[in-house]
Figure 1 (tube, rainbow, N blue to C red):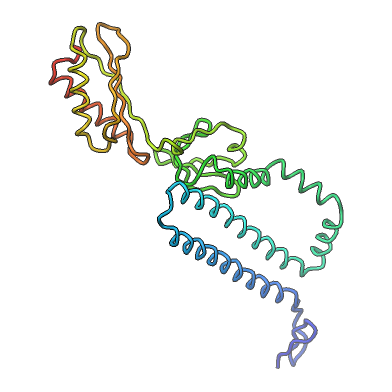
Figure 2: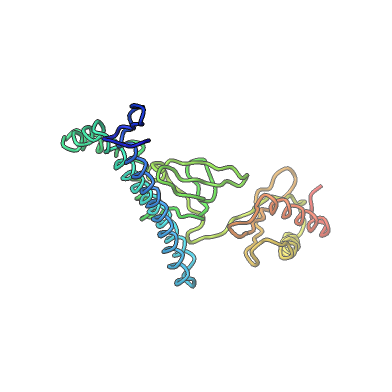
Length: 277
């Protein structure tokens, strides 16, 4: 016959071993906090979805702002809940509870926190808070940070993920977003520019060449209509070089568009008899 007495597992034929009741409390406490964590995450997602549904007609820029702020703050909330849960479970043991009380009661704890806040990882956390509210970048924006250019895919508590044109993910520390110049190509000018240079022979009518090029670009799918330009560039190598620029939507595949643009312009200049030999 089995019975549990004072944390000790006893059988009818003698004592088998110790069962520490604190481990039972740890398991129960951990399970409870896991449930709380899942519930908090579900509640935050549900609240945000409901809010966005009520404001479905909002300006896209405002939607991006709200999504960026919510994404970061929800991660902060989840991290805090997870930290409190872990602390609650560990405080069951007297050793860790004594260490926690000693740290909280001493000024050394505050000094450690202040020191970490100026460096990583809490430095990244603080920078992420600034980015979430000042928003020099937002989720979905196309930005250039240092030598990296791409779309902001995620703003985490420690880093910001960029998706580049060649489908690579670059993880930029949040502190870099507050200490490095950022080029945001979405705010106020949500487009991408495709450009290329083409030689035409000396003496060729530039107006005819420009008209032929613009007509070819009007039929090119993927470009923003009415925003193409043909400018006279340099004169060298026995040819006049035309600089052709066109605008494309922010999410356009500019590599393919640049290839299509060159092909269309070369065909148009060739048919007009303006292309340099």
